[in-house]
Length: 86
Image (cartoon, rainbow, N blue to C red; front, side):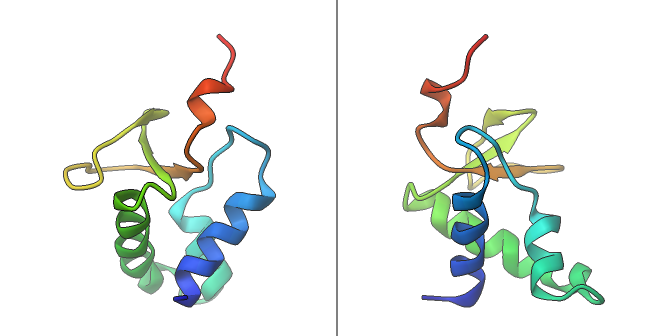
């Protein structure tokens, strides 16, 4: 397993159900001083995981298409939409 993939899944496992993490959190965990350089890797791995239905990419707290999303985004584990309360 890719170390970035392992880190994303580990961080997601540690947050409460239905909560999300930012790509910055993952990048900073990889390299505190040069985290900006890690963002591209984090995005690529997250897209791959989303295509495998292992995570959901969020835009404005709603699921986004991993192939077309742009801008600020977050990640959460799948199935959380059933647990959210209005």
